[in-house]
Image (cartoon, rainbow, N blue to C red; front, side, top):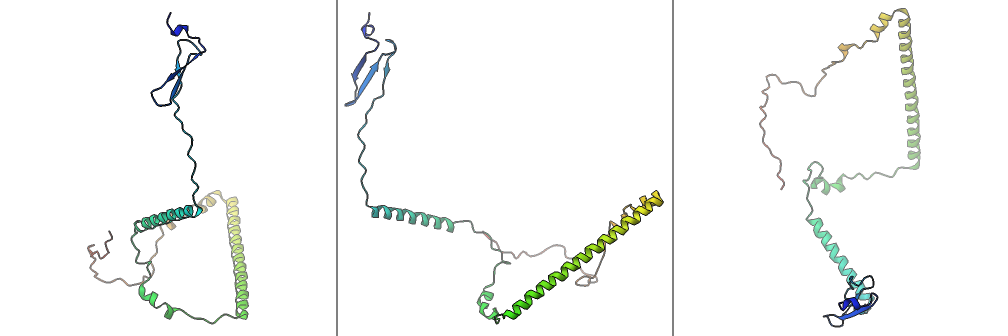
Length: 202
């Protein structure tokens, strides 16, 4: 019988490891043929945290904040620059003449303000009544139209079907009115060639 077979199944063997101060424990508590080695534990006591001066901590935070702001500014400068729209840019001449073009109107009196408010209310009431009149007229016309169609249907079904048909001659409607400039007689039409004067943006 081997030496391992003589070992009690609940015993522990302590074997010195290669590292300084490390110990491995071999146990056979489940079976004599089952050996399990625990991990090598080389722990050391935690280092004491150094107490920093609050002023130093604040200075570090300020430096970090400044560094981030500098990076953001650099990224904004190197951002994609869009092509400017000349139609939306205000000419420098108008900016220089802003003071000359500004109207300095006298302040409005309270009487004028009240008069304008009353005028707005009167205009709103007038337009409301006009709208109601228009809607009532449309309702009357539609009612008369519907009543006439009903009477026609009672008289003759064929005439009623003819009356409700869509007039196809009104669909391709076209009209020609006055233009801003009269046509030029014998005008030579351009062949489409033109000179591109638009600016190039990289």
